[in-house]
Image (cartoon, rainbow, N blue to C red; front, side, top):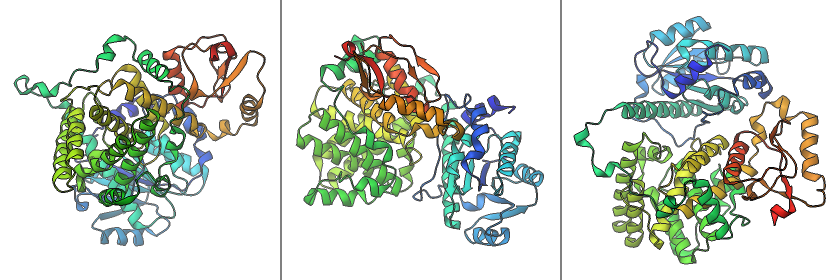
Length: 547
């Protein structure tokens, strides 16, 4: 398709394209997953380094923008009828227009301020592909956020996120309220992107720069190694953590609150009941986010053999962290403050956490937790360096786990591509503000999550269901190894291991040749690749290297 590179640029920097005000697009599709194989193959290279899965959560509501600021354009909505849907949406405060063809759709989107486009492509596969290509190839819509509403729309999110700045899915059967909540999500996300873009482009006068705008010095261990990956693997080996199971295999499944609650993360007794009350004050996404954060932190604290009292304090800190974000401030919980251009956001979150610390200390009568939460805020703001003290280790652990979850579960669902980018940041030293032992443990935890997640779903259906490829993958899993060989799971690879056979991707392409000795850099690359491209595992190595 022409114009893909331009559309990817539009993903990073949304453009107005001659339309005043924010432009939104909400599309309704009712097509099956096999319709996307050709498009997915043609757009795979473009999406290799930039992808964000978008979905919506019913907790999200409209931000400061009024519904009346947006005008809906309905195009070919079969059920409910356009008139019925128009009436339902008007009753919710939206202005609604109905158009008869794609040309009128484009014309209306350029003529109307703040349009929201609602489109149905029908049930036929050919019609679905034709409409998708129309939307993608129409230059005036290249910077338009997109919501998909229809049957099996989740398979189209990845494709459309490659061309549009925001994409979310609302699966059928759905109600008008579901549609409105999907619209609310993209409005909120779009406004946040616009605000972040404006903040990044704001020039700060030199005299206004204060010492607090520079992060505090990193832990001394980072200065002893030129390669961050080498440091992290050395820490795992020295602490006998390379073969320990952290529980990361459960993490990709924790998208629903009911599933998370079955893990019984909250303690029993009066203290657990108090935490439940605090936890219930947040919205659905916030509740799931904080419980997942507590889950990761507790698994890592257990692996590091923290005392039981410290583990309980850490879980409590994860949940009291939410006291700093109530109402519309909950939006701050899913935004990535560790990016290089997010200094203003980092300071805002730091300030909110400090305010929350006072609330925990005074209103909840938990002064010790309040002090620990204030320390966490200062670490987020880059105002303090990590020290070898229990309080700093606990705060750094919660900071790392909370940041990892807001990145990997930003859409409400596990995103292996986000995990891929997070590992890249570990390796490049962009998160060295965390304690190195915490960073190493998070790396190990995420490697288990990546190895357990069904990354084959990222492949087109024709490839992932190819009988020959499935048979090759089965043979590797079940075939006995030869003398002097051993099978090692991806997440158990260690520096110094030597490949006995080539490492291949699921599609049959060779990734690494045999007789290659793995180092820290190669192992991290393997984990990163496994997040976005299925690899045939386990890896077969020589027994000497295994020992």
